[in-house]
Image (cartoon, rainbow, N blue to C red; front, side, top):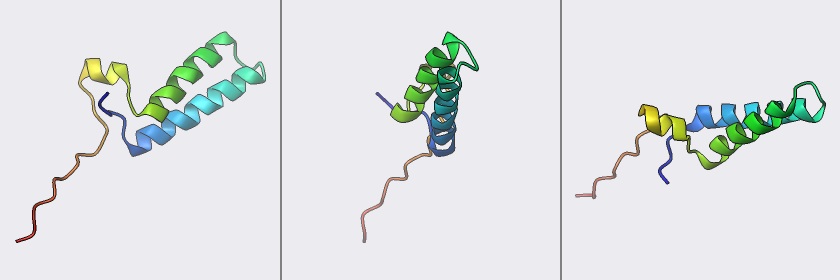
Length: 70
């Protein structure tokens, strides 16, 4: 599985997922809070978003290939 969720995006997803699940736990939102929160949290933890793949989006920084020393 290729990573397509980068640093800031990843942190935002993890925090949003935790916040939604906390709201669901305190009954501020309904069942959807658990479901959406878990999905958003998982995309942040695993650095992979299926929707990004479909849309061709990638927020991961490009990895520079190191050149051998001369």
